[in-house]
Image (cartoon, rainbow, N blue to C red; front, side, top):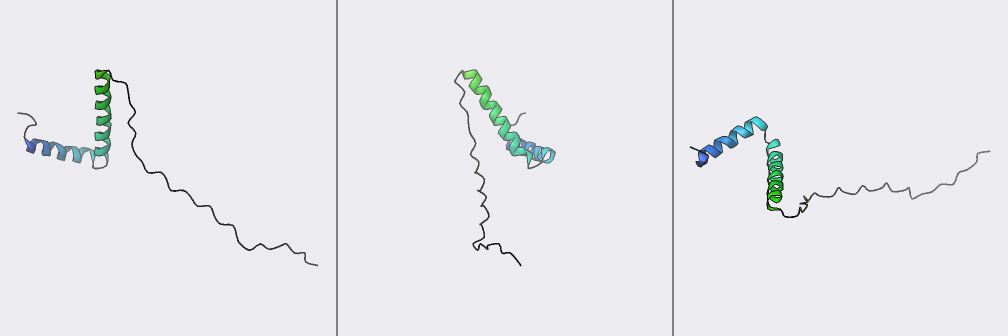
Length: 77
């Protein structure tokens, strides 16, 4: 009796979804993957290579345009 039955895996995933919510599950899976990768690298004795995640760069903010008409100050008599 283990998790060899697909019904058991589906039931486990449904319980995890109810307990932790849809937003936390990808974060938990990502952190579990990083932990397992670190454990595997430590056991194998290979040098550590940083795995970078691709994130989009923020859009540049456009500067406000200066007014095109320039008025000279006038003195009122």
